[in-house]
Length: 94
Image (tube, rainbow, N blue to C red):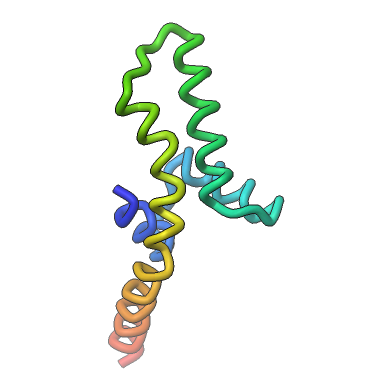
């Protein structure tokens, strides 16, 4: 999941709502993506629970792990996506 999130963020293919909120807050406050993502995910889990949703172990684990996992794989994924984007631009230019 983290590789997929990092890929579509890095390739500028559009960002999901939760990813966008975390990305904007992280950039504005100059804080790490992983911290902001964990705070956002936990906030969404709490709000969902208060609205009557079910919270399981997997939900809590995902809320704490997605942000750190995305931040960890980002540099590696960006190396690959940047190469692909350069190749595509060169191909499009002729």
